Image 1 (cartoon, rainbow, N blue to C red):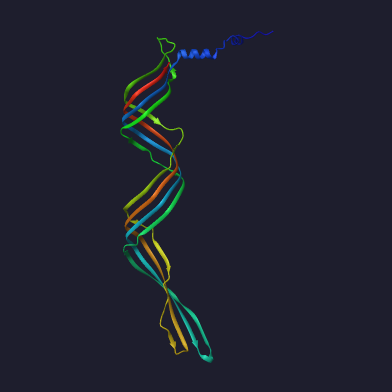
Image 2: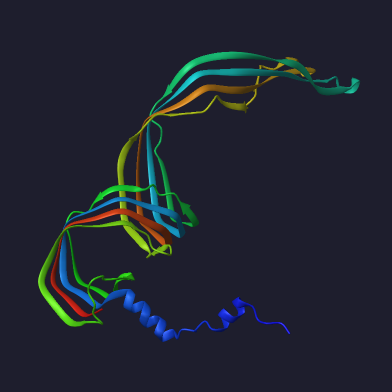
Length: 319
């Protein structure tokens, strides 16, 4: 017959502590101060500074633009390194009529030739204004990249009806050595005012992206502003310009034989560079609205200097 081991005997005699007893023992060692409500009727801060505010994951459901008008004035246009390639195609139409002996007609291609004609630089006078009118435009599902905002100084601020409910100090409890008490309770106390040299918050960030309400701006007018010269990228070519053909005087022998010489010109225009100068532009927008915007916001280094709390009240302090 086997006997139980020493470890089995010890395990059988380990007492099981009651949950309420364990809680009482823990509270006897670690205590917490509970403040039911801390309230201030009003307050102010002499200065408010934020070191850095970042915006991540900025999304916009829809941007509506109404009554967009844009006008561009162009003072002059300069064409650099202009040349024309002139092609001349020659044909001849002939016909004869020998009465009872017969008649005939036809066309004969005589060939063609091309000649480049350099025109160098050409300056055009003031061009006609360009005006663009858009009654309404909508852009959906945008993602924006907003750069961090640094060193924000909001100056003095004021607030009212500050309330902090059900506060535990500290949250993990504290112990007092050399002094023993079971508990104490303070119903309430108040002071006319309190002041602090500075209140700092190292980092502030909401758990969820912040949804912004619909933002609408009306009556945006941008007066005429100067624009730098606009230069084309690379050469500009306009090919196969076909003016009307022209005919040489008719060569004929009585009514028996006729010949028409026809010349067909074709132009190719090549511009080395197109420069629009003396540009001015203006714009007006009836309204711009941003719908469904959200962003993940994080603020760091928040400082409230010269904090004053008026009519400070503390209710139900328990230890």
